[in-house]
Amino acid sequence: MPSLGELIAPRRLGRDFRWLLASSWTSNLGDGIALSAAPLLIASMTSSPVLVASGAMMQFLPWLLFGLLAGSVADHHDRRRLVMLANGMRAVIVGVLVVFLITGNATVWIVLATAFLYGTAEVFADSAGSTLLPMMVRPADLGIGNARMQAGYLVANQLAGPPLGAFLFAIGSFWPFLLQILCVALAVVLISRISHTPVPERDAAVTGAATVSADGTPVKPHPIREGLRWLRHNPPVRTLVLIILVFNVTWAAPWSVLVLYATEHLGMGAIGYGALTTASALGGMVAVFSFGWLEKHVSFSTLMRVCLSLEVLMHLSFAVTTNGVVALVIMFGFGLYAFVWGTISTTVRQRLVPLSLQGRIASVNMVGVFGGLVIGQLLGGLIAQTWGLTAPWWFAFAGSALTLALVWRPIRNIAAAKPVLDDPAADGDAVGEAA
Image 1 (cartoon, rainbow, N blue to C red):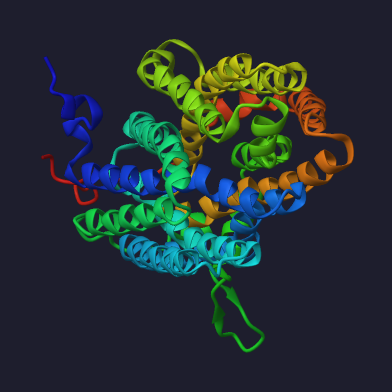
Image 2 (cartoon, one colour; image 1 turned 60 degrees about the horizontal axis):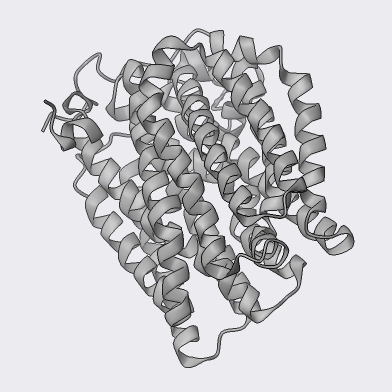
């Protein structure tokens, strides 16, 4: 019978993958603690839906400003060291906030500024971090590798972190953020154990040859434009990025005021609000144990359509319910399909993108993700303030239903596209030594 370690991180994925997984899980625990503590902190300082929504918006806004740059940096530097440096900066930024909280000088504007600076460091950490898995495992193992990474996200960020963050916040406003610092710092130590990650070589067959200036001097194409040009000429990945952008707008609108929806509309209180994300994580854990079977027996196109259809129904269900128990059941279902969607969409993108472009294409995807979140959160705050706390759910239902109708057929082309990812195991250099 396989050991627990073998079930969580199969030996064939290599030792480096295990260090990456441990670092990711630890960092996600810290972020999960802040996931409930940060909105509660802002809500304790203001009752304005716009300011509450701005907390998450200010953390995601840096993706619009620095996302493409971060992707280019990740493709031209040591990705492991970039993750370590960026996570170190995140720990320092939260440390400054803790000082303000302990001294009693924190204001809502200081919290919003912290969220922006923290989000800026996170842009560089996530852009580089998203490229490490394809460098360590074979394309055929990306599905299981992403599933394990997503499992860590569910357990640490969604299941364990939020209720712990809410509990610590009830004791003292600075305690959850102090623990977050310790988690992020430990994540830096863990990822430092990964063997050196080489800078990917430029592939002229993929990125295109250099142009020639008027005086005959070769001019290399700009790295960001290089990535955008590749994306423009790859319809499956381009369509996937657009789908993610639009669905994040509709998803983020109600999520931006979820803390007010849970505490005021449903009357669940601070602990009940944390329980919503816990219910989502429990649903995701069920999907974790089902994903291997689903990957073998159901086509990716079918799974993608089912997941997006359930997203539409989820918005409608939240719009009409007034019962906290029903909301927990809905959240459990959300966790089920959201985990499957996240794993499939990431795996498909990684298989279709060459290693030399992983950072830039991942950053474009993340700009779409967080660009959608920023737009959706702004809309959600304004809609809730004008028409009430259930109005953003109705907006999300209508918008996601219309989008699904438009992309129903193109989804087949995305899932059926031929993988072009370089096999890191081809020369035996990029796959970590088995533990």
